Structures are given as C-alpha cells and as structure tokens.
Amino acid sequence: MFPKLSLLATAALLTLATATTPPVTPPTSNQCCTSVLDSGSAAVSAVAALVGLDLNGLNVPVGLGCSPITVIGNNCGSTTVVCDAPEKQWGSLIAINCLPITL
Image (cartoon, rainbow, N blue to C red):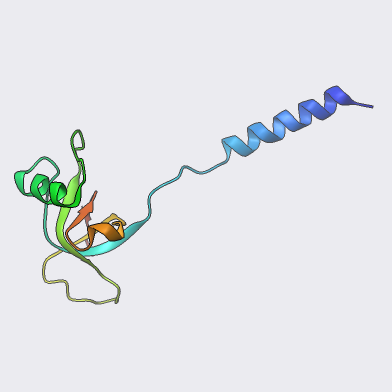
C-alpha cells in the first residue's frame, strides 16, 4: 500500500545502522617485554623475519621477549606495555604496537 514509504524507512534504518557501528579495534593485552624498539630497528627486523612477519612500512613500537601479564600486581621487572594482542604463532618473541603503561 505504501511502497515508497516502506523503501524510505528501510533506507533510513540501514543508514542509521551503518552510521552507529563502532570502529573495529584490535584486541589488546598487557605485556611484560624485555625491550621495546622501533619497528625499523635491526633487532626487530631479525625477529620479525624469524616469525615470518613483514613490518615494512610500519612505524610502530614493537616489544621483544614479551609475556602476558595476567595477575594484578605482577612484578614485571622489565618494560610494562599494552600491545595489540599477539597471535599464538608469535609466541613470546614479538608484540606489535606496544605503548608504555604508566601507573
């Protein structure tokens, strides 16, 4: 009976749903890393090559020798950072986009 109104209402709802969808951000994790270096450093390039990562063109801090902090109050003893959650295949060798945690 009201095909144009129905079409207009559907279009408006789809536009609203698209406009209110939050951006997708990668999961993060708290890490304790032995060092945090620039992604262009020789050490990071060597470790990235070992695990098959291509970091060319990235300009992000990278954590080396990282392990997750799972207990509140864990004594890291190194550099405490929050990083993009590492994939299992990277093990504790490398974590990407690591930013210092200041408490």
